[in-house]
Image (cartoon, rainbow, N blue to C red; front, side, top):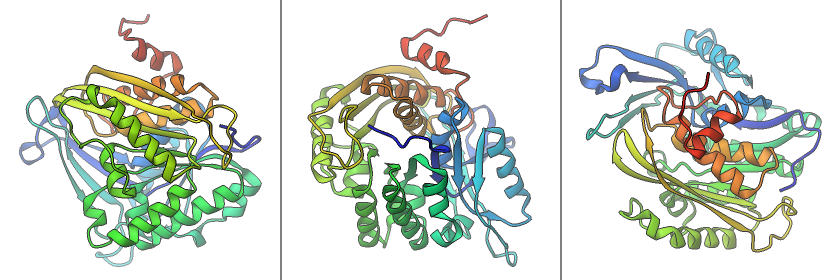
Length: 369
C-alpha cells in the first residue's frame, strides 16, 4: 500500500485518555489494598508500538484544565514519545468533566479477568472537529496513517461525528485510514442504528480494518465464525471467508486483520492472527487483486495481563505497514507485539527495539547480555 510521502506524522490517533487502576500481584479488586495506577486508552496502546520504535506519533484528545490527572496523562504521553494536541476544558463544578476511570482485575489462573468502566462526565465525550485544524494536520503537516477505534467512535454522538469527519479529511489528503472495531455492548445500547450508520461511513473510508469475529458482526453486520469457538485452528477458512465478505462490502480496504485467541487460563493463552493484504502496488482507492493471506497459527503464550494484547497486535501490524513490509512480516510482527503487551503490567507494550519483537516471534526467550 502506498503511503503519503514527506509526512510529518507516521500516525495520528484520536482518543479519550483515562486512568486504569489494577491490583498488584494479580489480586481481585474487591479484596486488594494495593493498586497500580496508569494512563490508558486503546488508541494510544496501539500507537505505543510505532512511538517506542522511533516513529513520530500525534495524539488528538481533550484534557480537563488544571487537573492533576490531566498533568499525569500529559507527562505519560511525553515519556512514551507521543506528541499531543487538544483543548483543555474547564471541569466546572464537582459534578463536571473528568478523565474516565477503568478498574481492572487482570485475573489469575482459573479466575478470569473482570473490567469495570466508570466513564460518567468523561471529557473525551466533548471531542469535536472544531477543536482541531484538520487542513493544517492532514494538509500542511501530513499524516501517513490515521488510526481510530470503535471505542472513541462510540463514546458520544459528538465523537461519532468527530471520527467520521476525521476519516473524510484524511481521505481527501491521501492519508491511509485504519480502524479497530472494538465493539462494546454498553456503548451501543440504545444507539444501535445511529452507530451502525457511523461505523459504516468510517469503514467506507478505511484502508485498514481490524477486529475479532464478534466486532465485525456487531459493528458492520458481517457474518463470521461463532465467537469463542472451541477449535479456532479448524476455523481458519471461516475467518478467511469473513475477510472475503468484508472485502466485498468495503472494497477500499487494503489490509484486513483479525486476532485469534483461545484461553486456557488467565495466564496461559493460545494466540494467533490472520491478516489479508491487497499487495504492494495497490494504493488507497485503487482496485485490489486477489491479495495474500498471512496466517499466524495459534501458539502458547504466557500472560501477565491480557488487557491491551489486541491493541498491541494492531500496533505491530501498522508498524509493519508503515515500514513497507510484506503481509507476512506485518502479521508476524503484530503477533509478537500482541504477545509482548500481554507480558506487561500496563495495558500497552513498549518494545525496546525490533530485535526484541522478532525474538518473540521466533520463540527465542534466552537471556541477552
